[in-house]
Each structure stands twice: as C-alpha cells, then as structure tokens.
Image (cartoon, rainbow, N blue to C red; front, top):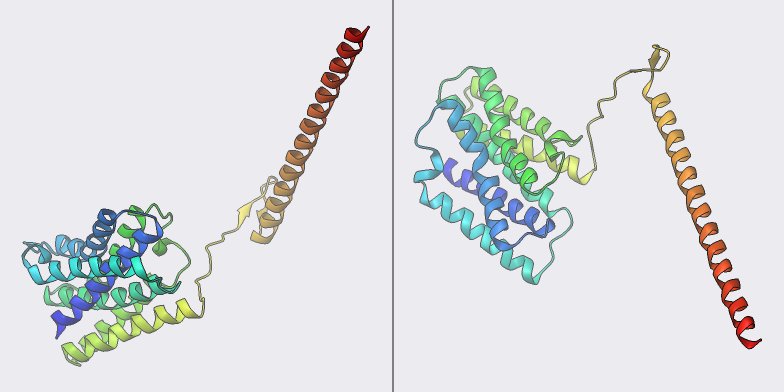
Length: 261
C-alpha cells in the first residue's frame, strides 16, 4: 500500500517535470531530465542525510520504469492536447503531499527525533520542486516565493508526527497527513492564497525608521522621474533627427536650383 502510494507521488512529480520543461520550451531530453530530477531529488537528499545506502531508487526498477513511462506519456499527450493552465500546480501538489509523508515515514523508521522527522519530511517534499525550477531557469523557485508550499508540507509533517505519536497506524497516518498537505496546497492554488511578503522597516536618509509604504511611494516617484527623463531624451533625439533631415532637404533643393542655372 505505501509503495503504491509512493509510486503515485513519484509519477506526479515526473509529470510536473515534463510540464515545467514544456513551459520552458525544452526538448524531449530536457523533459526526461526534469522528470527524473523532480522525482528522485527529495528522496536522494533524505537518504544521504540518514546515511542510507544504496540509494532507494538505484535498485528499484519499478520506480524508474514508472518515472520513464510517465514522462513519455506526458510528452505524447502534450503533442496532441493542451492541458489546463493550473495542471502543473495540481500534479505538483499531489507529488508534494505523497512524497512529504513518505519522507516522514522513512524518518520515523530510521528512529530520528520528532523534530528531525518533520525537517526531513519537508526537505523530501520540496527538494524536487526546487531542483526542477532551478534547471528550468525559474528564479526564485516556487519554494522561495509567497506560495503556500513548504507551509503545506510542514503542516502535513506535523500531522504525521502527531498521528504517529497517537499510534493511529501507518496507513491511516499516511493517508490523513497526505490529505492535509494536498488540501492546503490545492486550496491555495484555486483560491489564489499567498503568504505575506517579508517587508521590514528600512532606514531613511536621515537615519530614522521608514515604513514600507513610504519606501514604496519613494520608489514609485523615482520610477516616474526616470520615465519622464527617458521620454524627454526620446523627444530631443526625434527633434534632432527632424532638424538634420530638414537641413539635408534644403541642401538637395539648393543643389537642384544651382544645376538648373
């Protein structure tokens, strides 16, 4: 049951890698690279931290086959049909939910502390997305923007740890925790919910505290001044071209008159 659930999460991350490659106008090889990178990066980091060898995907041919088949199927689908706009976010949410709780499950089996379980679960869930976005040239990655992404993984990891402490059983614990991550992420996607941006108090030229609103107003004023200066320079350049064109026209007319004489 848990292995099947993990295959579903890995397949979702593989599809998200191909969709990201498609948006970045990559070739099929790039799509395969992103599919594998998004699928195995989180688990690889987790196993390296836990010193688990060999790495889980190096001896699981079923897992590698699922990744390859999902990547190729997604590419073939994209050649004939167009997916909805938020399809990348949806499949990515499925992968985040499943891989996060499977990371928590592996950390619990390794016997680490509850805090380490939560940290490893979040790292397992979000690493694939970070690697995928970096390879696509998308900066900053989704994780570092005001998206409800790592926050959803954190909530699911805490839920998993709580249910494990209550001895709810591995399967109910995994399903409930994955549902928490998936529901939070999909709610944020379809309701366009975001975390607040980090806006600290800045110091003005006089050394006093400057609120973010004042800083934004000052920045907007500077932007208007730069646009006005650019417009004035363009007008001056156009006037210069007109003047040069008029002088050349008068010179040509003068030459023509001299020739007739």
